[in-house]
Length: 345
Ligand SMILES: *Cc1c(COP(=O)(O)O)cnc(C)c1O
Image (cartoon, rainbow, N blue to C red; front, side, top):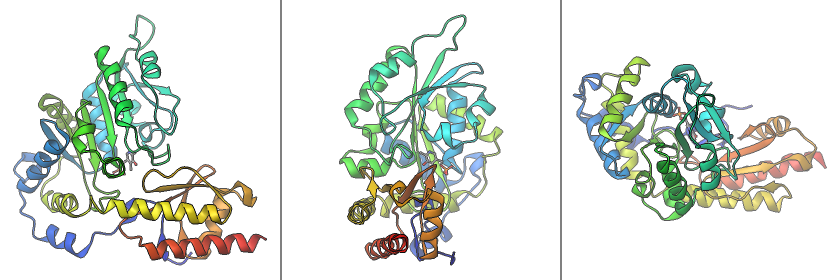
C-alpha cells in the first residue's frame, strides 16, 4: 500500500496536529505536572471539569489510562464491574481492569452499545456470599463498536438512576463525547451530570496528539491520581501536550458536524454502490462487504491498492471521518470502493 494513503479512514486517531495547534503547543507555559505546578495542565483540567459539571479533573496520557485508573479508584479486588459486551473497556484494553484492579466484568448484551434500565438493574443486583458485588457501571458515549452510536439522554439518565438506586457509581468512557453532543444538540454537562466519573479523549475527533482528561468528585480524583502515579502516568512539562488539548476545545468541537456530514455522504454513496451500511449517527460508517464474496481483510487490501485505508472489527469494515478528511476525500474513497467492486464483476 502506498504510504501514507491518499485517504485515511482507518480511525479518527490518524489526525496530525494542525500548524495552529503546534504553535499553541510550542508557546505553552509549562511547569511540573507531577507536582501540580504546570499551569497549562491545571487550566485544562479545570476547564474540562467545569464543562462536564464535576469538581476536579486529572490529565492522563491516554483514554485507556483513564479507564484503568477510574476502575481502580472505584473498586476493590474481587468486585464486579458491569459493561456492555462490545465496549472498549472489554474488547480493546488488554484486560487492564482485571489485571490491574482484580475485578471481574459482567457483560451486558446491547443494542449498538446501549441497554435499558431493566437490564442494568438485573446486572446490578447486590452480590452475596457467592456472587461478586457489582461496584461500577460502565457506559460509553459515543459507542465505538456499537457503531459510533449516541445514547439518548433519557435512556442514559434512566440507566444511571438505576445504578444510583443500588448505590453503584457510574463511569462514562467519553472518548468521543463531543461527537455525541454535536450530533444530539446537547451539552457536555448533560452527560457529566448523571454520572460519577467521565473522561474525554483529545486524540480522536478533537485532533490533538496526546492527552485525555478524567473528571469526577475531588476525592475520586485524588484516588485516581495515586493510581495514575503508580501506573507511571505522572508527567513533567506536560503543558506542551495540554496546550494542544486547549486549542482543540477552542477550535475543533463545532467542526465535528463536518465529520458527521462526511460520514453520512460516505454511507449514502456506499449504499448506492450496493453495499450494506449500518445507520450512521456520528463519524463512523460500518460496512457489510459479505455480498462481495470477500473477507473483510481482503476487501481492505484491495481498497488499499486504490490508496484508501479503512479498518475492520472481525467482518465489519469501519470507515471513520475526521479533521484530515475532506468532502473531496469522501468522493475519492467512493471511487476507490467503486473500483474494487468493478474488479470483482
Ligand atoms: C480510543 C478509545 C479508547 C482508548 O483511548 P486511547 O486514548 O487510545 O487510549 C477508549 N474508549 C473508546 C470508546 C475509544 O474509542
